[in-house]
Amino acid sequence: MKLTLIADQLFDGEQLHELRPLSIEDGYISALDTVSGAEEIRIKGLLAPGFIDYQVNGGGGLLFNQTPTVTTLQRMVQTHARYGTTSILPTVISSDYEIALQGATAVSQALNSRMPGIIGIHFEGPHLSDVKRGIHNLSVLRPAADHELALYRRKDLGTVLVTVAPETFTTEQITALVNQQVLVSLGHSNATADQTQAALNAGATGFTHLFNAMSPLTSREPGMVGIALTDPQSWCGLIADGHHVHPLCAKLALQLKPRGKMLLVTDAMWTPDAPQQEFRFEDHVITLHNKRLQSSTGQLAGAAISMLDAINYTINVLKVQVPEALRMASLYPAQFLGRSAEIGQLKPGCRADLVQLSSSMDGTLNLHNTWLRGRSLFPTQETSYEQN
Image (cartoon, rainbow, N blue to C red):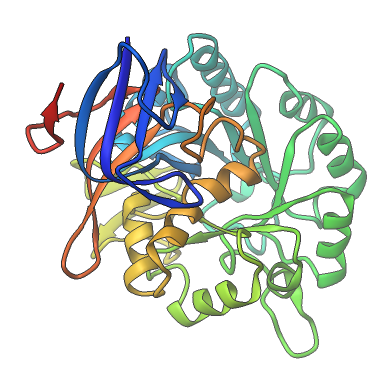
């Protein structure tokens, strides 16, 4: 089936267009124009690329670590798509090897069945610092064994991202993974600036949830934060919820990093669309209060936001312009993950993963519809107003 959407405005990931048609065929964008034989639908508001979240622990009341199955992945995709996210890396938090293996198996099955929304997997640990572990279980933190490195190198997992601490993961291991197209991000680390720089030199390209669970910038030791802020080539993930990072620190990071190197992530736990206000994760009882997740041990325990929440915080609190905030949630993550030829943009050849947005008087963006591979998730009477 051929379909042409004509929105009031279209943001292709780089530029804003007025009344620019977008045509879809077989789940992909075929043209930014009308095409012969397509059904044409006028769309209110703004069409933009679907959001990309490479740090997603759960959703819909489920946590991937606890039930690493295809069913959980389906729930996570459906839940986050309701808030505009069309591509995710389900994230396995530090665990026993068997949990990581089960998570990988589920992702492989999802990719093999062409499940929309799943593009790979993020292993956040267990090769982390005990000092900066957060809620990661101390008993499972460890150096990487050969069978774990082999798991990360598997070719049936889509995009593989591994978060490591440089003091527990050698530069040789980083280089070996990068040479096998595995992305390495640095985090949950008490590394010195020199150790952090060595990891970047070895091939690491990202920093996991900037400022959180990493050695701070001080006057005599720049730490991981100092290197992250001043390195022009690396990407930094930012949890924009007002709890993980003070807005002044977030604004400083946006000023220091080159355009395109600051990315939005949710670090979402079970909470989006979940009935539970409390959740048990290993030895932690995690409670949701005022949109903040806190463990019974006192630490922040992931986040309770959607990507749409993060975008609106970035616009309204950090005062980032709407197009740039959208890029931080779509184009830039796609570039970090090496997937910008197929997602993160609305251009011919890209997947038809898109969102329909409108803006309130206060500048808040509202989501009206999400398309996953050209399929509308929740069409309503308000979505379109003219059909030919």
